[in-house]
Structures are given as C-alpha cells and as structure tokens.
Length: 321
Image (tube, rainbow, N blue to C red):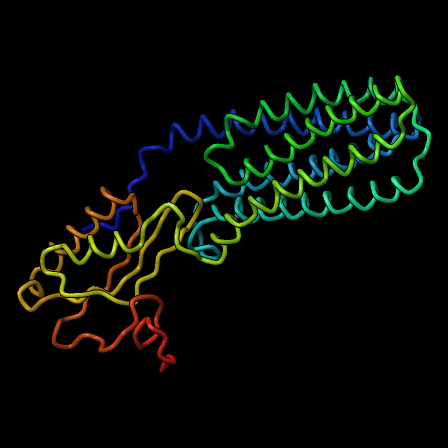
C-alpha cells in the first residue's frame, strides 16, 4: 500500500488562500508601523504612559506580525535533507515566540502602571484621545484582517490575540483620556494600563499550552487515544499492540507510530491488514500519517509498554531499557 498522507488535493486551493493571507498580514504590518510612530510622538507630546505603552505594544505587534509572516512563508517549503518532516512546525515556534512576548509585554505594563499609581503624572487628555482613536481604527482593521485566518492556524491566532488586546488597549486609553479631560482623574491612566496588562497576561497564558504541547510531541488534544487503540485492536488479525506514539507533525496533521502484533493466521496477509488499519485510522480519526511495524504473535516483544519505547507495564515498573 502506498504511504498516503491523504492531502495532495488541497494544494491549489491552499496556494490561493496562502497568497491572500500573506497580503493581509503584510497590510497589517504596514498599518501597525505607521501607528507605532504616531503613538510614540503623541505619547511623548502629551506625557501619557498609556499611549507610549500602547506604542510599545504595537511595536511588539509589528514584530509578531513579521514573525508570523516569515513563518507562513517558511512553512510552505517542501521537506528536504535538513528538515525531513518539512518546515510546517515553524508556525508553531512563531506562535510560541508571540505568546511569550505577549506575556513579557503584560508583565512590563503592570510594572509601569504600578510605578505610576505611586506617582501619577499630568497627562494631556486631547492628544491621548485623538491618537488612541486612530489606534483603535488600525487595531480593529488588523484584528479583522487576521480574524478569518485565525481559526485554523495557531500562528495567526497568536497574532490575532495580539491585535485584539491592542484594540482593547485603545478603547481603554480613550476612556482614560476622556476621564482626565472631564475630571482630571489622573489615576485612571495607570489603572487602565494595569487592567489591560492583566487581560493580556490571562489570554497569553491560557493559549500558550497548545504550541508547547505540539513542540513537546504531545498527543493531539482532539484525539481520544483509548478510542484509537480500541479501534486498532478491533481490526481483524490484530492480537495486540504496544510502543504507541501519538504526535503532531504540524498543527493539523495527527500522526501515529505503533508496533502491531498479528495473529498467526493474519501473518501471511500483512499488507491487507496494514491497508485496513491505515484506511480505518484515516477515515475514523483523520490520522493521515501512520507508521506501523508488525510482529508475529509467537515472537512478539514481551511485556512491552503501551506507550513509548520502554519495557514494562504502564503501571510504572521501573523501565528496563
């Protein structure tokens, strides 16, 4: 049976999607660049920390857009001698970098806000409101450009959350500027800054687990391992199985490696059993990449663990390598 990954027919469609996606991301990079300059100038002129904080946040956004853009390009390169699995995982690395920078930005803003709570400075309200209004429009535009793409890419999702947190930041800055204009309530600037920061931290920390899990070769979260093992054991000719590995090559490509122990009767029709196993894995669980090694019932690895490559039962006997 040919080793089928089951996704050759999407390529043309992917190519069109990829180009329009690239255009969106590059448009967002330019918009954010112009905005960062405007915010830094406005922040310095008005003495508003919230504006400068927002500008720094936007700068980190530009960096994250650039990282995501580069990752999308690199991810499309075919497998080669250096990267035999292809380059798709670069998008997961990019997401990890972007979530990490979001956490750093969040922590920095909390620190700055706390310093300003102790000693609230004078802030020029009008400049703040106007610049933040412009920022809100650009952030909303960037979030809208990436919103449709974020559902199926962890890389773009990290980016979308960056932009969303920016748009919220701008709303908060507008509120703060207005309150300063109306009531000269200076504490609102740092309070708002800390509020945004806490929200950013919460978002980033709750999302960072996915990329980490994939890079750690964790089992795909959407697959029920026990159900897959049961289905494999249920195929005619399979006596048992061990040394099972569930992992993800890329974000949407679940993979499985396993040693399958065949009954004596099935040993002579290995190819047919393999075809049945692969077809079932693909149809029922969407696992398009599987590597199966067969062992004869009478000569099978004794006392092998279900998962990993160690001996001994799962109950935790110290592994004898």
